[in-house]
Every structure is written in structure tokens, then in C-alpha cells.
Length: 172
Image (cartoon, rainbow, N blue to C red; front, side, top):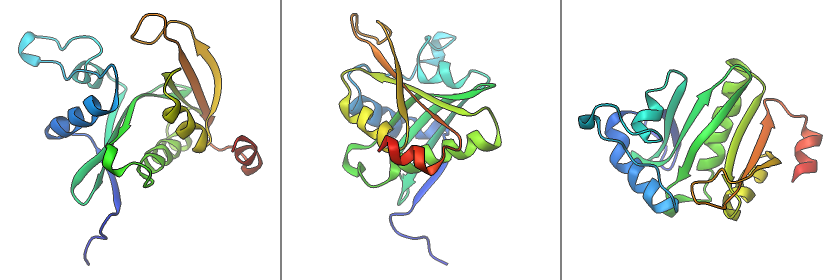
């Protein structure tokens, strides 16, 4: 049986994915994460390698036709999953890849941990805010001065593992 063309395949992130992930990261964010260099000893705090070396941190990628189309890094907590980093390659945005990754996390919520999915985004990142709202998340607060650039705030978005359909419709 042949694999469907343009099918989205979500899998665990592996080290050889990093060059493509870093390209997407650099293209997607004003303040991109760095990879971190193991030759220096411990990777720098906040780098991909430092975050992924944490006990509860997980990285996943979405592939289309054998190419990485997006990625996410999240932390499993007792009562929630916190999405730390999330991006889709610019040339394949608006094709359901981001939604498929969020759906994967929501399925993890119901099976493995807590009831909440939490993500923070820059107050100036309107496309991210609209995306998180479109996938059923609600803006619930502002973290003052918590974004990498001084004077910028982060907006906290949350969703429950199983929200009733009526609540999802009301948020649309």
C-alpha cells in the first residue's frame, strides 16, 4: 500500500531533524531559540538541546512527503501540558498541520496528564493568537514583561482536554 501524498505524519523529534527545525525556527520568530552546542559542555539555558534534555520535555515533528513541515516542544506536567515552542514551515501554513499537532497534544491530555493545554505567545503575534483561538483555545491572561524583548507581554492561551462542543462553538 502506498503512502498518501500530502498526508501529515507526526512523530518524535530526533537529532537529525535539527537542521530543518532550526531553519523553520529562524524563519518563524523574531527571537528564535538557538540549538545549543554540546561541545561547550551543557547546552545554554533556553536552547533546544537544553530544553529537550529536561526530564518531561518532548519534541515532535510533523512531516509531509518526507519533509519536516512543523514541530512542537512541550513539557508534561501533573495537571497540564505546556507548549513551549511551536511552528509550521511558511510554505505549508494553512494546510491543517498546526491543527493536527494541537489535536495530537489534546489526545495526550486525555490519556497521560492533567486537563489543560497551556501556551504563551507574544502580545504582538496576531497570527498565533488567531490560530490558537481557531483551535479552541481561550486567552486567559497576560504575563507582564515575560517575552524576550523588554517591555513585551505574553498572552496565555488554555484549553481543556475535552471541552463540550457548545463551548468550542461559543469561542469561535
